[in-house]
Length: 371
Image (tube, rainbow, N blue to C red; front, side, top):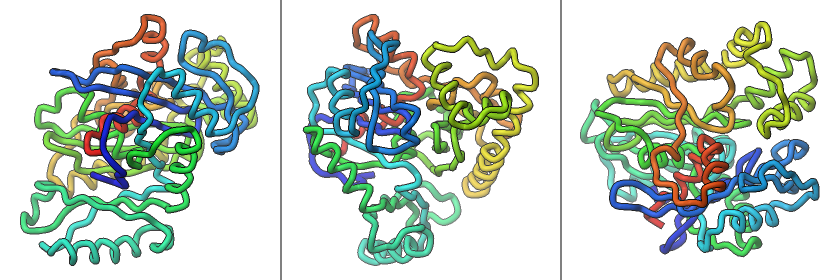
């Protein structure tokens, strides 16, 4: 999908997440992708997802050292690019589900002009934004419908124009050029198709669990067939900690940060009732996953055989087991860096690989070859 593409030449993936910034540069090799440059810059716990200030904590050789001096988003982007070591100045960014709506469409076979008009009318009915305030793009997907081969079936993305402008402004002020803007979920699927396990004609799901949202893609050999975003209403780990320890969300967030940086000896698996609390926290997510699997089977007449889990919250103890139990489908942890050649210095490689499950969106952005 050429969603808001602006030109051609080598690009780096720039993922501006709610808790971190990731930069990735990949090169295509003969057999697999090669990771040339990468950086992970942690966002501070007191910003609450805002884009105005950051702190410098990264997955480089000095990851454990954290500077408290606040920095703007533009400064943080510059810092992440420097840490990565990339010379690419053209980047591909993405927008979260709250700012970029993904919807599938299916119409009778139409001319390109008729299809564009039909998609705009459809978008007006389903997106939560004013149609005049969005940038809209679409892609017809061949072979996605087993019901009517003569139908025009595909996917469209509607992005809030103000957020597109904000991304472009931030990257330009950081000295970068925006090559394209994608969505988090489509980038996740792109990464899985480029750095995931062999599908063997099976339908599998890839689930990226972040701090605010979860991105779900169901893929099968030949392309992706289903994408959606699921709101988590807060970090899974923070909500578990808040319930287990009887502390406020802000305190839970601080404890989560300490655990993720290795500064806390809290072992959730040793806490009584941990798994029961985790199940309770995951009830909404599991419910949405079950609905998605059922919808996919109805549309494609195929069962999803496996769930691959990644993202910043994918390392929560027993997360995969509880999801597998609730959805009724085997689930396993997925690190996309295990499926590419990593060409970094030894110490930098160790630190980046530890953040691998969080790098999927950035890697998917870096794999865009149509920009």
